[in-house]
Image (spheres, rainbow, N blue to C red):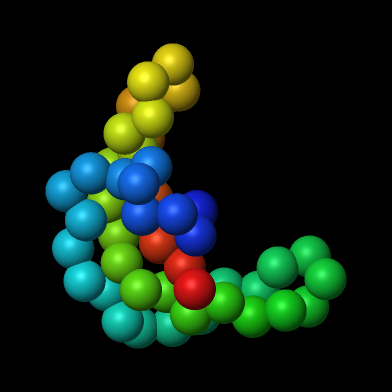
Length: 50
Protein backbone atom coordinates (compact mmCIF):
# COMPACT_ATOMS: atom_id res chain seq x y z
CA UNK A 1 0.00 0.00 0.00
CA UNK A 2 1.32 3.44 -0.91
CA UNK A 3 0.11 6.99 -1.35
CA UNK A 4 2.70 7.75 -4.05
CA UNK A 5 1.80 6.66 -7.59
CA UNK A 6 5.48 6.89 -8.66
CA UNK A 7 6.18 3.61 -6.84
CA UNK A 8 3.65 1.71 -8.97
CA UNK A 9 3.46 0.58 -12.58
CA UNK A 10 0.51 -0.73 -14.57
CA UNK A 11 -1.86 1.15 -12.27
CA UNK A 12 -5.53 0.62 -12.95
CA UNK A 13 -8.45 2.46 -11.45
CA UNK A 14 -10.00 0.89 -8.37
CA UNK A 15 -12.58 2.91 -6.51
CA UNK A 16 -14.17 0.49 -4.08
CA UNK A 17 -13.55 0.57 -0.38
CA UNK A 18 -11.16 2.09 2.07
CA UNK A 19 -8.36 1.07 4.40
CA UNK A 20 -7.96 1.89 8.08
CA UNK A 21 -4.52 2.77 9.41
CA UNK A 22 -3.24 1.92 12.89
CA UNK A 23 -4.24 5.33 14.27
CA UNK A 24 -7.85 4.90 13.05
CA UNK A 25 -7.56 7.27 10.07
CA UNK A 26 -9.24 5.96 6.91
CA UNK A 27 -7.81 6.21 3.39
CA UNK A 28 -9.76 5.78 0.16
CA UNK A 29 -8.47 3.22 -2.36
CA UNK A 30 -7.81 4.97 -5.69
CA UNK A 31 -5.96 2.33 -7.71
CA UNK A 32 -4.14 -0.97 -7.79
CA UNK A 33 -0.86 -1.84 -9.51
CA UNK A 34 2.56 -3.47 -9.34
CA UNK A 35 5.43 -2.25 -7.19
CA UNK A 36 8.02 -0.59 -9.45
CA UNK A 37 10.68 0.40 -6.94
CA UNK A 38 14.17 -0.93 -7.86
CA UNK A 39 15.72 -2.90 -5.04
CA UNK A 40 12.35 -3.85 -3.57
CA UNK A 41 10.59 -7.20 -3.88
CA UNK A 42 8.34 -7.69 -6.91
CA UNK A 43 4.79 -7.30 -5.58
CA UNK A 44 1.47 -7.33 -7.44
CA UNK A 45 -1.86 -5.89 -6.31
CA UNK A 46 -0.38 -2.96 -4.38
CA UNK A 47 -3.06 -0.47 -3.35
CA UNK A 48 -2.80 3.24 -4.17
CA UNK A 49 -4.55 5.12 -1.37
CA UNK A 50 -5.45 8.75 -0.73
